[in-house]
Amino acid sequence: MASLSVSSSSTIIDSRAPPSRQASASASSPSCISLPTLPPPPIQSHSRAAKATAYCRKIVRNVVTRATTEVGEAPATTTEAETTELPEIVKTAQEAWEKVEDKYAIGSLAFAGVVALWGSAGMISAIDRLPLVPGVLELVGIGYTGWFTYKNLVFKPDREALFEKVKNTYKDILGSS
Image (cartoon, rainbow, N blue to C red; front, side, top):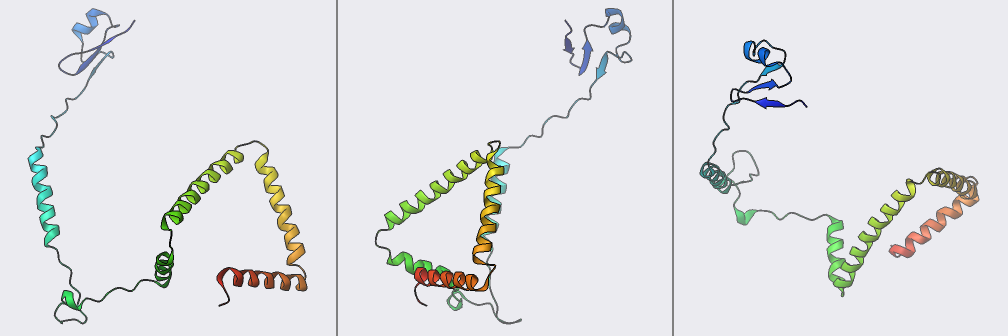
C-alpha cells in the first residue's frame, strides 16, 4: 500500500521509494515534488467592510437627479415635475380590476391557471420522452394542417367564409366595436 506524507516544508514524499534515495536526493528524485508555499490569506476586518458599506449608502443618499427643459435653465423643482402617463393597456387593466367585485376568486382562478399551465407543460414533457409518441403526434399535426388548409384556405368561397367566421367570433368576444 502506497502512502504520501507531507512535511512542513511543503514537500510530498512517496513512501514507496527506497529510504536511501529519500535521504540522499530528495530534491532531484522523481518521487519527490516540491510545492511553493502560499501567502497567508488577507485579513479583512468586519469593521472595514461595514465602514465601506455605510460610506456607499451615504453617497447614494446624497445623489439627486434634476431635470431641465433647455440647456442653461434652472433645474426643475419637485412641484413642477410632470407625472408619467401609463400605457393604454395598463389603464384598461386597472379599470377592469376596479370593476371586479370578487377579487379573491379572480386571484384564485389566476393561480389555478398558472398551476394548470405548469402541470400541462410537465405532462407534455413526459409525453415527449416516450419513444414513438412524438413522431406520431407530429404526423397527426402535419395531417391536420394539410386538411385544414385544403378545407378552408385553398378555395376562395371557403376562405371568405373562414374570415367571416373569425370576424364574428372576434366581435362576440370583444363586443361590437
